Image 1 (cartoon, rainbow, N blue to C red):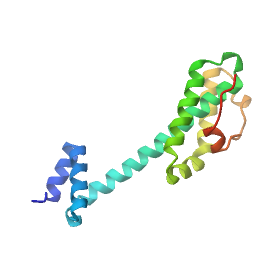
Image 2: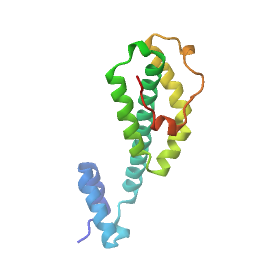
Image 3: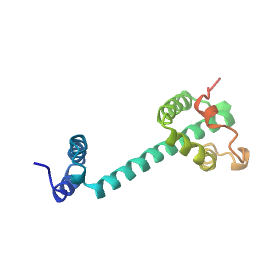
Image 4: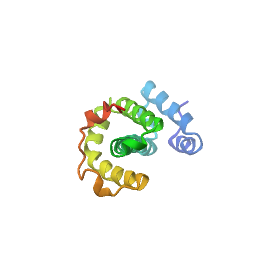
Length: 148
């Protein structure tokens, strides 16, 4: 017997993973009329938003550490280098999706401005010490090598 939409709504609120399994089962069986469309739409929008925020966060962290690396060479640390390597690696994986890559391209300049603010706060340097516009393309950031 196929669950009713009210039961699926209750399941969505109680156990999201079980609800996802139920949605997948209904799709697999072709029971599209039984799908919990309202919550499915909300869930998919939330997932897309989380993915975008993840890209923004990783891009911001990568930019902050690159700025600190380049503008405070006397204070370079292994943790900055590890962060640059890790964030660029994770971003490359995230951006295999064309939609997320497009999002990264669109938000790059905003994330750069935020990164300048954070780098200035962390380094004690003036924001004016950093470039006014992002000097890196997305591809340059993804392949950045923190050379000593």
